[in-house]
Image 1 (tube, rainbow, N blue to C red):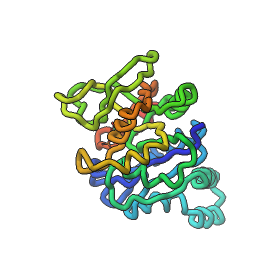
Image 2: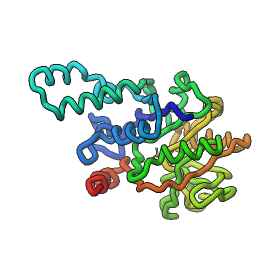
Image 3: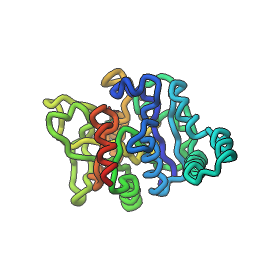
Image 4: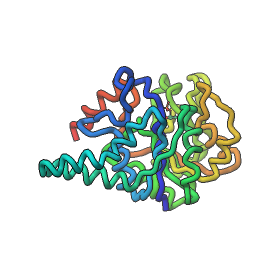
Length: 271
Ligand code: G1P
């Protein structure tokens, strides 16, 4: 079973400036609810029991959000507001499942994953990138089902416009398993249009093997001088580790850019 998830949260969020100059992007409200809560709900509804947050000293605000017991208790003592009691209970439910580790220098997703190593107990774990919201259908749950069936790594995927390939991790299909699932031949981080092996992008949901930690340790920084999880995945594929790309059914919302962030509230408001 997949019981643990990790969420890299140490990014600076420069694509959302000025909103992120003093505020953590993952706490920004999307239709009245912090973005991170959508991600947590997806994990918990998919059966995940423990969630590891990789934050930084600059993002302590995220920890504080879940550790504001005294604040809630004081308010609830003064006025018995049902809504506030409900919100506090929800925060407590999340808090009991979250552990924190630190990545104080943002050196990329691969480096973030490595910081969570000491907590990972099982052979496989889930990773969610908080900029990527997937609504209408639980993508993590669908991926966990695929993992249960094949006992291999899984990544969420989506076909993107050819002129946007340099924004994503792009993979090449080795074999079609069925309508939504494909065995991957290789993956490359943010290629140029010329070098892209396809227009199939990796979206921020990954079921990864513990073996990946060793691969990350051997990596040198690549694109943007960062250690990319994509490069570690390619190394595992070179060693014949199987990766399945899952074309998810839900709707993708890119909350990491200003236009995408604004649009997310509109889309979720329609639900
Ligand atoms: C990250 C990954 C990339 C993936 C993307 C999905 O990029 O490195 O491979 O396609 O998430 O959103 P980032 O959004 O951090 O630039």
